[in-house]
Image (tube, rainbow, N blue to C red):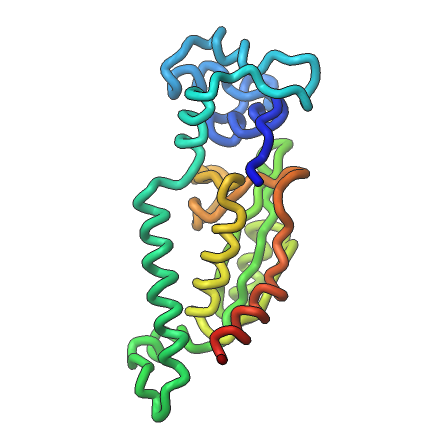
Length: 218
């Protein structure tokens, strides 16, 4: 189910996409107006409501425009889908005898080692975003992720390919909540972020990873 665009949600989305105003709490309405081709007064009118739970006064076409500015580009989504298909195929190939389905480059790049998928919670001003990240299950690499944000969910998977599929499936479930983070918000993985708010679906990486592993063994 898609999120309801209340005034509070519109404010959060605009803060994350266009930055904060002088008070460091409200969105930069001038930047929002310039990006959307409207006047600053128009943006202020969209954000005007009795309280934060009120439905935002933004026309449907303008909301579609804003969502398009928030979401990763179509070519990014297509690339993610392509990478997931490759990963699914690779996982199936791992079951073949005598390493017939394994490419030497995979072992060289250490993709067949255990990997960790984590959800990081990252503060952006007074707001919070969440982001998926993948790393080999090594103490120094895991510690590096923890320095980027608070780990709020995680799972171990057998290979890099399992991690790719788990991330793809999780992002698919979070589709309407996703947004393309800025380089001042995350270190990398700009397209694997989403808004952390009360209506955002919870992630359950360990359960999803277990189901994925079982399914590919059949």
